[in-house]
Length: 250
Image (cartoon, rainbow, N blue to C red; front, side, top):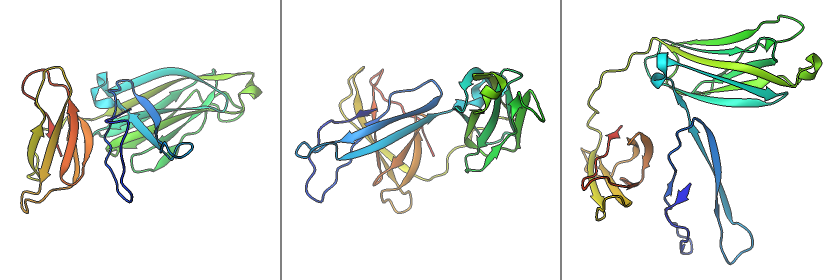
């Protein structure tokens, strides 16, 4: 996390917009950090804001639309995984294979918040099964959260960890044909002097095509979501040539 500036002056009863940028993160997972604001004239930090960033596995980009991971968990612990499911998938399934190397279960949270929980896989006294699955027909598009939980009673079976294999599989997905966006915004751009290899701030203005007033909403720029504030989005760009090209979608 990098703020655009580390020191600001704030007038009484006023406000300032502070731009925060994030380093490119390629490894899927859950990342969090704190932004701390401190008035040098008062003791301690005055404001703390937690920032949480989810980087999901893009199942539509995985070979065969399938992802698998082998891992282990101590008793009573859990691991979280995130998967992005695009529009148009016919079926989504999650499989947890434990065998006799532990005891675990699945919790799956859909983008809308609905949660489903599997039975236990692995060792046990009744209804013993080596693997469990949860399946979803026409899954909701968005980011799905999958939690693997390792039973707190592993010591009853003389085990310390649950060794497992988690598999996510998406079926029936066909990439949608490219369609031009609706005429939602008029876009203009202003940039600082462009120097190849050096960061430059690009200011994008979004206008309502009918009223010609500053627009609001959310847009994707170079694959990242940005909220439009007062008809404007500012992004840092390091140009490779004397011309800056941006992919904008809504």
